[in-house]
Every structure is written in structure tokens, then in C-alpha cells.
Amino acid sequence: MLRVDQIHRYRKHLEERYGKLVERANDYKYIDECKSDRSAFKAMKILEKLNRIKYLDKELSNPLM
Image 1 (cartoon, rainbow, N blue to C red):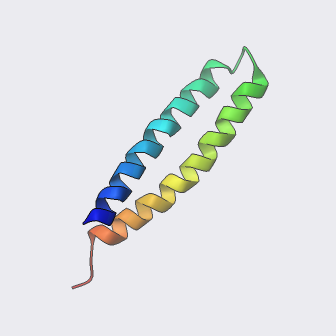
Image 2: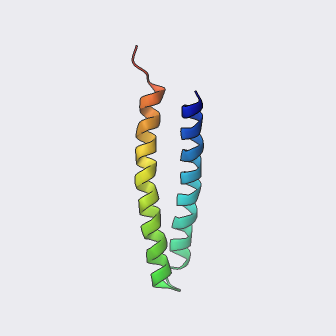
Image 3: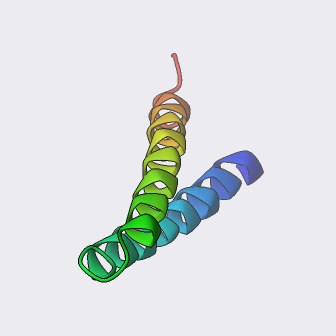
């Protein structure tokens, strides 16, 4: 169960980071377009990782009988 706990912690970390980056991208939208784009790009990369982690978590939660 140690691996499952690690995946849950990593998923929570990524979700928090993703939320902060999306918020930052929206905050800088009209102030500094370059910073907004950079934050949005980082958020997209984290979203890709999140999708992989969610898939892994789903697979580990439903073991074969």
C-alpha cells in the first residue's frame, strides 16, 4: 500500500500546483501575456502528468480478482 499512498500524495501535489498555475495564468492574462502563456504551458504539462497518475490510480484501485 506504500506505492498507492505515494501516488495519492503525488496526485494531490500535482492538483494543487495545477490550480495555482491556472490561477496565475488568469491573473496575468491582461498584465503580462508572456507570463500568462508560460504559466498556462506549465499547467498543461502538469495536466498531462495528472491524467497519467489518475489512470495509474484507477488501475491500482481495481485489482484483478
